[in-house]
Image (tube, rainbow, N blue to C red):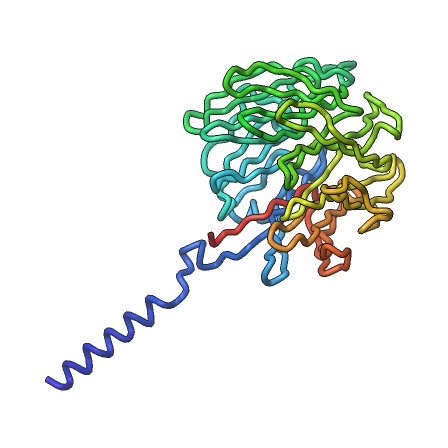
Length: 363
């Protein structure tokens, strides 16, 4: 009887011990906080891939999409957004939108390609996604991009509704049931009422590109000059929009802003970081900080270097992840700085790293 009891106690101990061991089949047991890096590749050459930077171990894994799916990605990803644990890839060369598991990068469904031409950026509200699309652009139309539109996607049925928006819509954000997007061929921000699809416009000083919302709820937009739509240096920088009446209320000058207008905001939403690039063929690059309360830009660059291609801020500690691409035929570099501009880490990425997307896999 005593032997039987001891045997049962041993079995119970082993069962408890086994239940505490790491389950390799559970992606949460392996995961950590990561930064996904979209390596664009080359429009006419190599295609996109994803790198994963493990924030806790400070290590990088390249070719993560191919590892997860067993096949190469066959398009070029213009941008990536994670919404409700799905990563959406907008492929402007490939004319499709891929649905990929945010935890494992495994393709979830067939991509959407019908009524999707040159997708750019993604925003979502409820069960609907809104993607800016340039549509077909014929020779001689790059100064106007007349066939562009917003693709409204029902995320359950995958049905696409096209809403005409000429002018080349770019960065997009949703505030108070309104979709704001910059037009890359005019000095106008388009505002679409999501209840009616009616579009109105806000005139700004130069070509609007991307948006952030500050601590007070004000909308900031980057203003750039494009080759096909040039503006003088005094028009460039950032402008502040009051979304209650859709009027411009302030401007911060930044003549050295990059043509893509990349900007991101700190976790307390009081500091905006904006990327500068020397005009082609120059390679000098910078990141400046802007005080959202005083609406002033730093007197000197926080970070300087060459060939900056994109950047983002870790939302937990405001570390700055800078992507460097010397060409579209060689691997790029990820450099991580703290918010004072001190270099923390440096890693090799895939070809032409363009975007950083942060994700907590264990949440």
